[in-house]
Every structure is written in structure tokens, then in C-alpha cells.
Length: 466
Length: 125
View 1 (cartoon, rainbow over the protein chains, first blue to last red):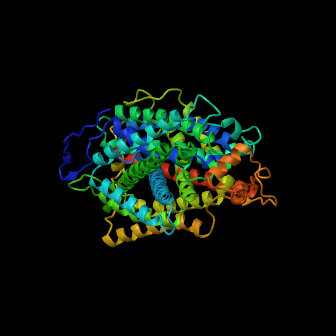
View 2 (cartoon, rainbow over the protein chains, first blue to last red):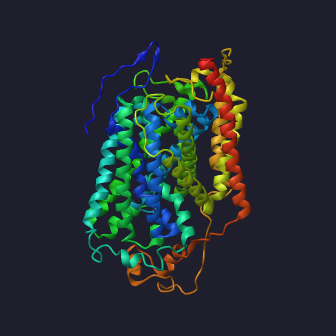
């Protein structure tokens, strides 16, 4: 895949718009870059909730959930190509209040994911240094500030950096996999002795259901590819291609990661470590692999945080542009053509939570917002097909087997809500209460500042049933 | 339908709205942490005999724990720190009601707003 810059200048009258400079490789880099860190930390907490085998079962079942997400998202986004991704979809298909909520889901999911990445990076450096008295806060602050600056300076440079570091991190997983002779048990890998009939599912099947919560972390964020819709040269081609390629990449990485890690460490340790792949590198006894996985963990965290800043800022920017939030946020930098005020506004929020939350709390905040968003997506696609049946508008991509992916997605979301309830129920209720209260604020107060018909920007006919 | 012209918001009003959103975000994310509502519901099932056998670790597992720098004593709190999956039905019902109520409100209120959008955009076309 080649990455080239187009000297695009898009100034419509006095209005400065985002630049259309991205191709499928950038879409892949944005999606996989955000998600790949999930292989380096987070997925393994599924083993804590249900055992090593539960982590594998949810890897595949949640993979099905995300395949549904990718299929649905590719159809809607290749048709609604606007910054904000699912926010723009909700605005055109369901309504303004839903769009407002979806944008908040996106901002929370990505900002908390960015926080998790920064904590991981800080903790990894502190653990590597192994010196008493070193605090992770300075590394966290430096990570968030430098990446925000990179995002401020331009989307093309941001995603070019993401493409390179994501590729290096991914290759490190492949190298680890083939270095441990995966076709042979007993030499390096000891799966039969570590995952036994007695400990494979320590909590039984309820543990498998509970593990869904962190199974989400294998893939959380792949839907972020849609945030770049307004900056992609050919959304109808690049978005489905980049998203599907990303999903295949992640399924392979998740399977390799589980196999190596479950074959190298007991499930109790696997379930609590912050660095499963780095630990796997250490346990092979190879200093080269240990150092490679250490560097890859840092790069994966950087790539993810970088993509998250990109996506959260675009969702926030879209809210300002449509006057759902003060229009101050909708400014585009006159030189760099980025939503710079949104980037700067979210910076201190990410910093604050990076200092007060720990890793699995930040991950849970992110997962909660993600699952609320996927629930919306399953209903959204049904409404989309009903309001604009096939043939009524031009779609860049039409996903097969409708409505099966939507039904599968909805059912798996219900199971995941139950999984979150098993261990993190209070957090779920607190967050939904927040979304409910902020929705009341929007519906009964803020919406008066929003133009009505101007929100609908797609060149589509009137929806059926209205 | 007559075109709706929203009121212009003053700078002070914009600043106030930004403050409301920031406070709401911090309350939603910070309060559960402060109140101890965030985090996993786990507890340690303590054992008197702290040996690898008592902790359910076979020789391969024990050798890996030791390679990672643990002894049976230091690994005890990790191995015995377990979830206790007891379904608290009242909490589950409250959670389900909150979630369902939230989504019903979202879709119904969105639909009311959406009808205005479509009316103004398309009129009688």
C-alpha cells in the first residue's frame, strides 16, 4: 500500500474544510492502529473474568460481533461520508438526540481508550526501568501532549506515523508467534499443562459470559475508521476496504496472541498482567524477543492513542459544527486544516483521567461507551434499510445477509451488558444515568440553538414513512 | 413548515454550556471512581497453606510463577483473588430498566426532533 499526499486545497467560500488526503492504507492504519493495543493489554482481563479458554471463546464470538459492526458500518458510512462517523449516521437516520448521544459515546470511548493507552505506556516504561521512585505520570503527560500536538499539525502526518508504528507492532506479534515454534508443544509452548480440563473454565459458563466484557477489547475501536470519512479521497471504496482489511488483520492477531500467551503463562497471571505480550517475550527466554515486544507494546499504545485523539476530536468537532455544542468547537485550523480547538479541549480531560483512573477502570469506561454505540448501530441499520430501501439511494457498499448481522450484533450487545453487570454493574448504571441526564439537557435546552432542516445534508430523497 | 431560526447564543452562554458539559463529564467519570463504584467486584479467598499444590498450580505453572519472580506467598493474593458471580436480581432489574428506559427515551425524543428536521428539509415534497 502506498501513501501519497495530494496537495488538496479545499476552501469553500470563506469556509475552511477538512482535507481529502487519505487512502485505504490510512483507513487501515486508523482502525488497526487504535485497536492493536488491545492485543498488548486488555484482552487478557477476559481470562481473569472467565479463565484462559473463556478468553479464546470470546475472542471468536466477539470477533463475530465486530464482523457485524464492520459490515454494517461499511454500508452506512460508504453512504453517509461525513466527519463524525456514526454521529453523522445517527443524525441522518434516527434523529438529533441520538446523534448527540452517539457523539458522546464516541468521545468517551476514544478518550478513555487514549487514557488507557497512555497509562499502559507509562507503566511499561516504569516497569522496564525497574528503578524505585520513577512515577508514570511524566510519561503519560508527555505521550498525551506530544500526540495532541501531532494531531494539531495535520491528519496526513498523524496517520502516516500511525501506519508505520502499527505495522511494526503487528509484525512483532507475527515474529513472536513463529519464534516459539507454534506447531510444537512442550519445547517453548506448554498449552496442555497450563490450560487443563480442571482450570480451562474456572467459573464455568457464567465466566465465559462475564469474559465478554474484556473480549470487546480485542477489537474495540475498529469502527473508528468512519471518523475519517470526510478526509478520505474515495469514501465508498476506501472505507469498506480499509475496515474489512483491518478486521481480518485483527482476527489473525487476536488468535496468535491468545495461543502464545495462554501457552506461556498460568491463567491467573495472564488475567492480571498489564503486559501479556511483553511477558510472553520474557518467558521465551530470548532477550531479543523481550525487547522487541517491549518496544512493540509502546508503539501499539502510541498508535492507539494517536488514532483516538484523531477520532474523539472529529466527533467533538462535528457536535460544534451542527451547533449541538457551542460553535467555537467547530473551528478548523487555517493552516493545518485540523479541528484544533476540539483537539485542545479534550487534551486536559484525557490528562486528568490518566492521572486519577487505573488501567482496567479506564478500559471499562471505554468499553461501556463502545457497547452503547454498538447497540445503537444494530437498530440504526434496520432503520436505514427501512427509510431508504435498496435501490432508493446510491450505496457505496451493501452488506449481505441483512438483517442477520444486525440481529447478531444486538444479541451480543445484550450479552455484553450482562457481562459488564457481572463485576462492573454500578459503573454501568452510573454511566447510563449520566447519558440520560445529559440527554435531558440537550433535548429540553440545548436543541433550541440547533437549525432544523440544515442538519440533513445528504442528497437523499425524503425517508419513507415521513 | 416555517423555517426555524435558532437564537444566537452569547459568548457567555457558550462558555456556560461548555462548563456544564465539562462538569457533567467529570462527574460521570470521576464520581464512580471517588465513590468506589468503579472496578471489579473481586475478593480474596484466603488459604492457610500457601504452597503451589494448595494453590492449584502444577509443576509447570509453579516454574513459570517462579520465573516471573513469585513465591507461593506472593502469588497467593493473585491466584485466590476471585470473582464471585452471584446474580443480584434487584440490581440486574434496575440496570435493565435504566438501559431500556434510556433507549426508549432516546428513540422517541429523537423521532420527535427528526420529524421537524424532515418537515423543514423536504416540506411536502
